[in-house]
Length: 330
Image (cartoon, rainbow, N blue to C red; front, side, top):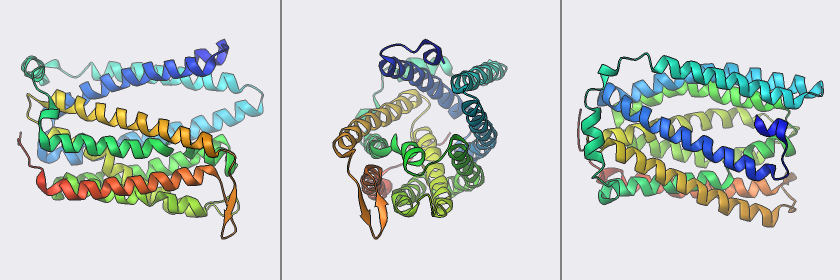
C-alpha cells in the first residue's frame, strides 16, 4: 500500500523487502497457531479439523477474491487503479485486526503445558531424527519444484491468455470453491488411511497440472475446469498433510521444533526453486514456438519443468511412507 503512493526509484527492492517482512510475520504466527492447535485437537480428528477449517476459509476467500477482482477492474477503468489497491489493502488490514481480536478471546487456560513445551523444545533438533529429516528434505524438494514456476501462473494468464483482474479472480474463486468441497474429504482420508498415501496422491495430481495448461488458450479455455478440480484436490492433500504430519509424528515436547524445521525446509526449498526458475526464464524469455499448432511460451517450459520435479518428489514420498513410524498418540 505504501509503495502505491510513494513510488520510490527502487520500487522492486522495496517490494521485496516488504514481502520479506510480511512472510516473516506470517511464518511466526502460523507456526504458533499450528502448535497451539496441536494441543487442542486430538490426533485422530486433526485431518477432519483441518479439512473443515479449509472449507470455511475457502468460502470466505471466494467472496474476497471475486469482490477484489471486480473492484480492481472498475477502479482501473476509472483511472484509479492505485486507489483500488490501497482500498483492498486497507480492508485486509481491518480483517486482520478482527481476526487477531477473535483469537485473543479464546481462553488461555486451554494451553496449560505451554511453558514445558517451550523449555524442552529448545534442546531438540528435528534434523537428528533420521525419519523426520527425510520428511523435511521431501517437503523442501517439493516447494523447490513449486517455486520453480510458482511466480509464472498469474503471468501466463494475464499476459498470454489475456485474463483481466476479474477473470484472474474468477479462476482463484473456482479453485477456492473446489478446495472448500474437497478439503473435508481429504481430511477424512488422512484420518482413515494415513498422511503419506494422501500426500503422495496429491503430489501426483499436481504434477499433472502442466499438461492441462498446454492446451489452455484464449480461444479454448475449457481445460481450465479440469485443471481447477485436479489442482484443488492436490493442494488440499499437500496443505493438510503439511499440518498433520509434524503434529502426528512429534511429541508435545518436540512439536515446536518439528513445525519450525518443516517450515524452514519448505521456505529454503521454495527460495532455491524460485531463483533457479527465474534464472532459466531470464535465459529463454524471448523463446516462442508451436506444438501441434498450439503456441508455446517460456512459461510452458517452466510448467513442464515443475511438473517433472513434482512427480520426482511424489515418487520420493511413496518410497519413504512405510519407513516412517508414529511416535506419539495424544
